[in-house]
Length: 151
Image: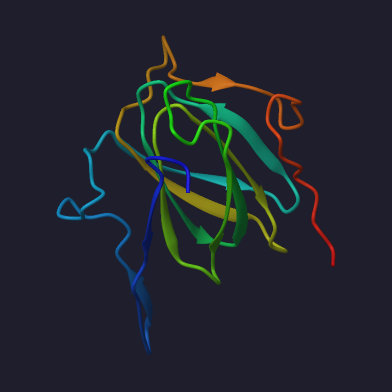
């Protein structure tokens, strides 16, 4: 796994009313600090990629739908420089994915309906000077193909 990337399997507690799952707690080993919490949606088949942050750590949880999330380590000082990781998050795999600063990330909604991702980031979004550095989803700089692999 890419250096600094962590996961937390979410404990889902169902009952006759629905279900509950704690995403991130301040007493979790992987908790760093709270910046802000937001959600974003993605339509089926859409790719949102690539970007990284120089300061911010992200904590993604797909609360509805299914997502293929890909990471690429472009950090010069990382022991896993050049490594790619792929994760499947969502309805069928309740997982928190922590992505450290400097790691490119993106996702594709692979479900049949609009998907929802919640991010608990370590920093607040800075409207005047965003901590976001982007590449197109199909860049040659990252060795990853968003197409489905049949087989």
